[in-house]
Length: 194
Image: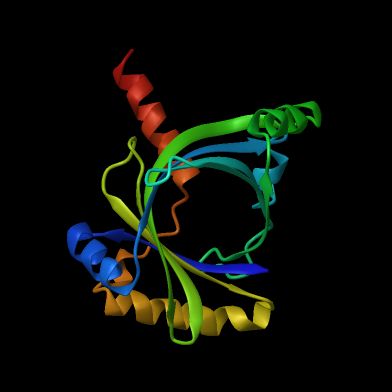
C-alpha cells in the first residue's frame, strides 16, 4: 500500500478541530516514536524510515505498538511513500530485535494527536491534528491509502480538497519531517544551554 499524505501547519487549530469533530469523533492519543537506522545512516540516505510507535489512547487507556517501514517517496512534492505496518505484541521485545539486527535508535520523540477517520470524496481518510512538545504550532496530517503509484495524484487531489474544506491554504503545506524538526530544535536547545 502507498500512503498518500499531505501535512500542513495549522493557523486556526481550534476551528479545524471543531470542523473535524463535526465529521467524525476524534480519538486522543500520545505517540512515543522511535526511529531506527543503521549506524551509517543508510536508511535515511535512501529516504527510508523504520519506526516503532507505542500509542496510548487517552479514552480507553489502551496501549498499542506498531512497527512501520516506509520506502522511498514515490511523489516528491508530497513525500508520499509505500508503507508496510504491523501491530507488535511486545514493544520491548521489538526494540531488542531491531537493535540485535544492527539498527540503532536515531531519534525518539513524543507526538500528541487527535485522530479522525471519515470518508470524503469516495475515500477513507485519516486526519490527525498533531502537537509535538518540542516544536511550535499545530500540524494537520491527512492521509489515505492507495494500491498503485498511478493512484497517488488523484488521492492527493482529494486530500487537497479536504484541506480546502477545512480552510487550510496550500501555502500552509510542509514537507518538513518531524524527525528533522525535532533534531534541529534539540541542536538549538543544546547551543543555548552551553
